[in-house]
Image (cartoon, rainbow, N blue to C red; front, side, top):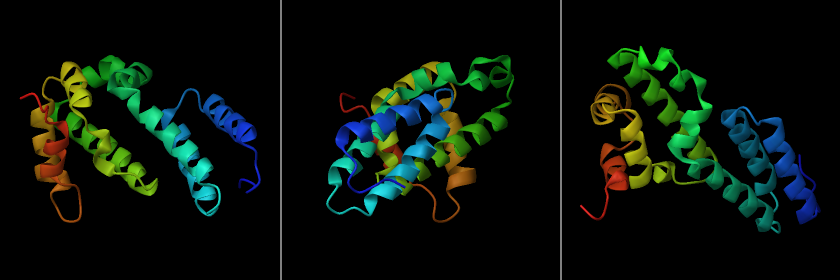
Length: 161
């Protein structure tokens, strides 16, 4: 729990400590930031703290897939390369669903993780990504109150096309 009267400098130090503690795990860092966000949301007079946490969450997101993949040994190793197509579908379905859920829990737009730049960097890494996402939407996310394929496609569309 954060004290409502915390100074900005002390709060920045707290963010740095969280980052250092979770240096090897973006997932744990995001979970820590989400917990911190919930804590500061109750302080109506401290929107500055809320904005700092949201900005930090955005920085983590903007590292992009390429940076994320560098830190993910499971994707850099033969274990990802050896995954079957359906195992890759299951992998991406779970990871992207989790990231979108984190966005919602943080009070952010769940689709903001999808940008044309993100899409292009993902396609460089996973050449079958379009086919994978077709399967994700038809078999995993298209079964009720899940995510919108139309919104996803709108977000990844390059306006220059």
